[in-house]
Amino acid sequence: MLLTSHYHILLSALLCILACSSLQKWQPLDTDLVNVQHHHPDIKIQDLKTGYKLYIEQCSGCHALHHPSEYSITQWDSILPEMFSQAKINNPNEKLFIKQYLYSKTKSQN
Ligand code: HEC
Image (cartoon, rainbow, N blue to C red; front, top):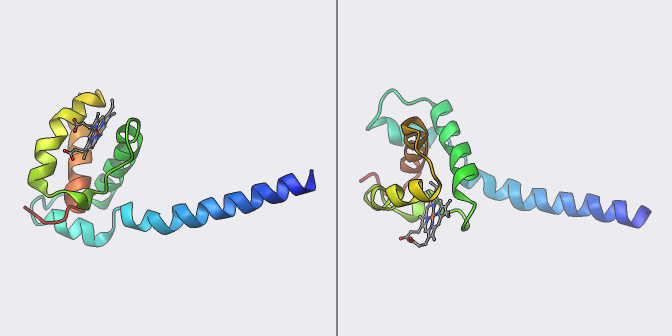
């Protein structure tokens, strides 16, 4: 009994260390907001957070998530239409939130 609960605590701590250290890499930061505001001045940090949440929820079902910086904006633009239909995302706002999140962290701004 005691052994099992210790094991659980240890496991949760371990998972948190893994998840918490990599989280920073994925979360929308103020520097990402500045990137995307060059092209879309009206975007708010809250919009990027919505996109991030949707991205994690909708895009991790079939394969591991790709970090936004793996692709350029041009590459994302050619990948996304197919993946939106794979994920059955039809709502234009949801598409936009995900796009803006990805653009804000892409490897180059073009
Ligand atoms: C129903 C399953 C499914 C869902 C949901 C899904 N994908 Fe995919 N994804 C695939 C498959 C299958 C491939 C590999 C074959 C391909 O490239 O078409 C892939 C490949 C990719 C690639 C690599 C493409 C390349 O050419 O290197 C990226 C990036 C990607 N998906 C992003 C996304 C994003 C963003 C979403 C959410 C909008 C998403 N995926 C949701 C099935 C899915």
